[in-house]
Amino acid sequence: MAHQNLLLEQPLFRSPSIFSGYPGLVAAESTRHGGVSTAPYHSLNLGGSTQDSPEHVAENNRRFFDALNVPLHQVAKSHQVHGTDILTVTASGRFEGYDALITNLPDVQLAVTVADCTPILIYDPTEKAMAAIHAGWRGTAGQIVKKTVEAMEKAFGTKAEDCLAYIGTCIDECSFEVGDDVAQHFDPTHKRWDAEKEKFFVDLKLANKHQLLFAGLKPDNVEVSNYSTVLHNEDYFSYRHEKGLTGRMLATIGIVNL
Image (cartoon, rainbow, N blue to C red):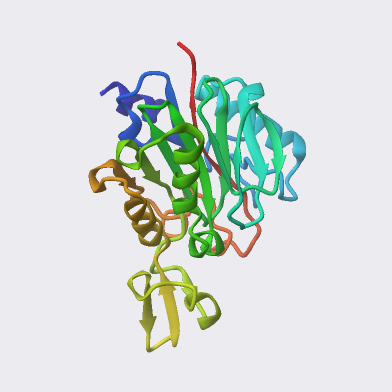
């Protein structure tokens, strides 16, 4: 009940329920509400790569992380390039060229930016290790989620069967219409041909879930967001639906020392 009340009081974010049983673990994804940005970035735009006012973006980040009780100086982000490079984070800060961040350090809050691409958060409660992943179609096709689990195993001794994961809010299958140039990178299980539109539709959530399961996570340890950036555009930013003129959400995970 306390968790539900928190969501009502803090419309700036939603927290995955799968991580709720771990005191000190802060995991959340932002909505588009509660910020200061004006149209077309209204209102909680957390992305610095837009043409929004830098002052607005900075204030929005302050509000979001304040709501999570996370000091801004503890946040680790990277400029994302739709690749599969993974950074083992040893200190907070701003990095360049990584689409997945992993750490086992407390008081380092990992964060990735999204606005249709799939955010994935992973937590290993045994080794106290975690990951924040940005998986667009290129990253998904490049197996970034599977590679991140493998990186956690190598760096921290993580066992996949111990891990919990959240597949966050992104563009939904019925909205992700693509041509053969994109569809060819996906297994038949993760795409659907629409004869009327003569287009494929790709399911990024399912593709990334299957990567987690293939890596060794248990099905019951994977939560998938019920929300869509397109179908629930009133609550989330969608780059495709809003034709590129929109803000960005953050998905974040970290351990705060109690």
